[in-house]
Amino acid sequence: MISIRKEQIGDEEQIRIVNTRAFGQPAEANVVDTLRKNCLAGESLVALDGDKIVGHILFTPAVIEAERKEIVGMGLAPMAVLPEFQRQGIGSKLIRTGLDEMRKTEQPFVIVLGHPEYYPRFGFVRASRYGIVSQYPNVPDDAFMILVYDQAALAGVSGIGKYRAEFDAAM
Image (tube, rainbow, N blue to C red; front, side, top):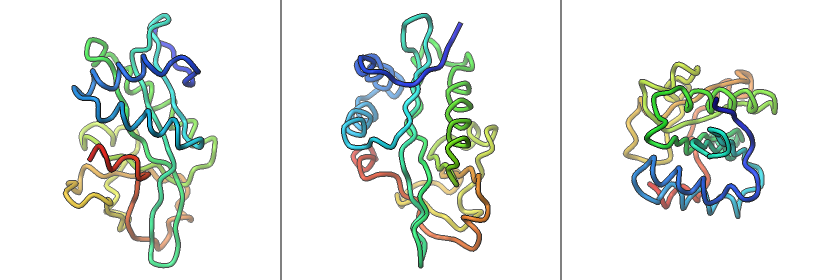
């Protein structure tokens, strides 16, 4: 039985292993480690099989830089599941639990840079529908998505969706 809980002290090494194995490289794990030190406003969740961490998701503050204002919401990244536990609904469970938390904390939006066939099932749409583009110039339009919780906060806003600077090292 898979359970979801918030990251706790002592989870760091298992989370690092999950991200490194899921992505086949340490870049995302390095970003998570750096964000853990630099960003107290994030939400980090883990998926457990017994007492073993098999999945991880992180939400950190993100902004939409518009011409006249900056809107702060959250960015989803990374989301990782150990390869031998993939395709069992664990990633979906992490995302749904995390998005429920974002809704409860009244975030106006969540952005994600990810698979265009996967994230729409959770309500994400192309950010370009709102006139929002990624800070990273080579990102395909269909891979940069947004889930808007507060339509009024984004009314008439267009601009650049930005993750925290720590993500630049992985791009």
